[in-house]
Length: 433
Image (tube, rainbow, N blue to C red; front, top):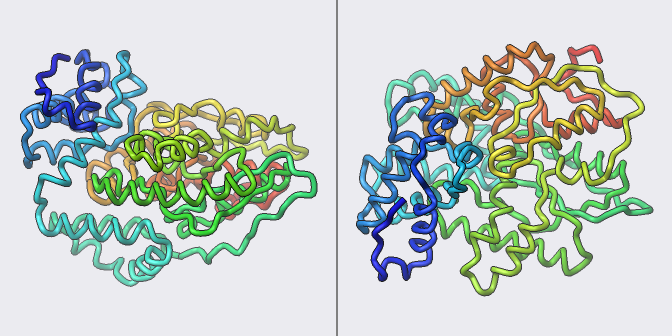
């Protein structure tokens, strides 16, 4: 794609990088076939190619964002399916991230939209605040139909419907140091996941301990920054990234780490991008790159251990939902399925597995109507497999899909923990195996 940036504009490192990405696009349109919003809405401007044109026009002309570009960029899920499809290697992720940061700096959103986005940014990344908000949501759930009548309040209706009816107690499980360690890893505790489902990291700790992996949980670790990053609140995201880089660097220097284990694939995609995000920060560039290189999804790490077949394999059919951040963001496709098959499960792959379920961080809150359509499509394909349960590797997907199906849905690592001697996930209590 031909670009027309001035030499002065290209002195800005972010614009310079955007220009390089834009030049890689040959506007072939392959991305439109796999873009969830284009498939759902049929509007060219709600496709990656359409958004690229809008972003190019805005940046080349040095314009502030306007209502049109904000509307179409906000509709982007950042599922990155387009990047898996693109034959030219266009890094759409970095381009749309830059566009969102530009929007945040130059566009004045409507008051209620600003308030809603601010609430999400100040609550979801903080477990104590998030837990309190969920308690309040239990009381407010009857108001959801009322909120649905007003466009500005629809995100609050979506929040109330997504909130669990029961809040899990805080996890008390601590890592146990094995007598003969095969490796040493840190585990990302996360922010929303330990509140919504602490059992995921508990299963991970049990499973790794069973295979003599020492697990450390560094004190002071916080949100990975992905939530505010995708809102365009770039400085907040970078501060959260720097904080975690400091925490993990101390652990690396204290005892060494073979990996930083991540059990929420949405977080994994962002942490693996820390090296890029902090590339211009002289104090953090090298440390961030080291952290990104150590970041591993839990299944990505488990396959390196060459696990044996379990003594009591579980003969259940599992529909595996590959989260967008897993398959498109991190290019992890085979490992989770291979581990499940090794553990005795029959893995079934739904049709249109490349399409997003509609979760996408806070997307199912801020764009509830599109998210609901995507969930219905996803659930239909999953249920058509005839599987007894669903497995996935991202808490956002679990929450989103669970709202549209009666099938039990669990994290991949919970099934693996069960197969290798751990407790049966409570969601599967009605199943025979």
